[in-house]
Image (cartoon, rainbow, N blue to C red):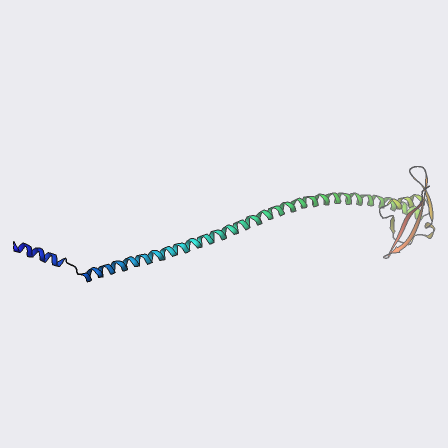
Length: 189
């Protein structure tokens, strides 16, 4: 039996630890755990920094998005206002163009009538009708190519639409190297 004890004690001695061994093992375990805690703390700090960075990036992106949406809305409203203004301006231009066309037609018609009557008026006949026609023209004047006779420039009586008599005076002059005959209504009884 003694042999059994000795084999048992030899087995125990190979597994027997001293206090130094236990302290060394404890220090190694504590160092390992401290290292793990440092890595976990570092990982926590990196995660927190990434989260803060993500929040900053998200808020910046939202601010840019909000700003661009506001700018888009402003530009859309401005575009609509400009389109409305353009439509109004085009309408006004069309009205003005139509009026100008009608006025040019009236001037051309009056000019044609005046040209027909000018030759007879310069000859001394039908001067009163010529005076009324010049007065009713848009500028109340007519340009002529040569100096009109001085006998043309005095008062002329012409019948009006109501049956009365209007008195016109013809006045001549030279403006920018062009001879002009003006007609003024001086009396309407």
